[in-house]
Length: 181
Image 1: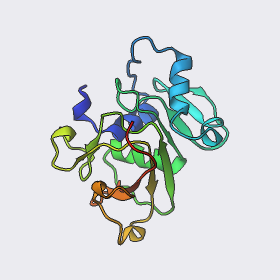
Image 2 (image 1 turned 30 degrees about the vertical axis):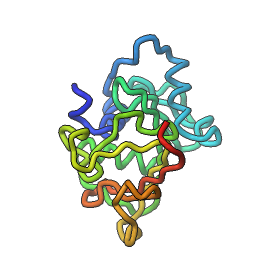
Image 3 (image 1 turned 90 degrees about the vertical axis):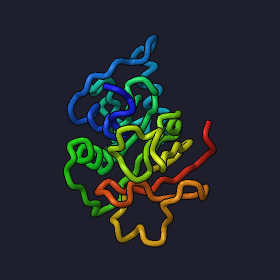
């Protein structure tokens, strides 16, 4: 499965919802993968989060958050998601409809690490060749009901929050919190 064929978040959802077994980066051990997963969010979130590695729950959390060490098999992009984000990712990977009724939050404090996506199409077959290809450094992703997106730009070059995948059920706000590493 080539990295460019599946958008970043779809692979995350596969890891979580379908037990998709990906290969760890050579030399990674379980402790390193757990550390990487937890690096996606502040300790106040990640210390008590569930951690899923290679499709298996390796730490049972107590706070409703789920952290993953990789969103692509080889890129090491960690992410920590609340329950609504995990639902959205499951819907996205299974190409089901999704409608946010409440707010959902995901942390990616390590950023995209060079594996960006199309800003308009979560299923773009070659996102790095997309006209709207985007990589974001450390950021938050926020799901809100669509009516709350009015007035927010979908232009990632403005330096502030922007809307990603606006014409899809998986629309969310990207909130950069630091420059790319």
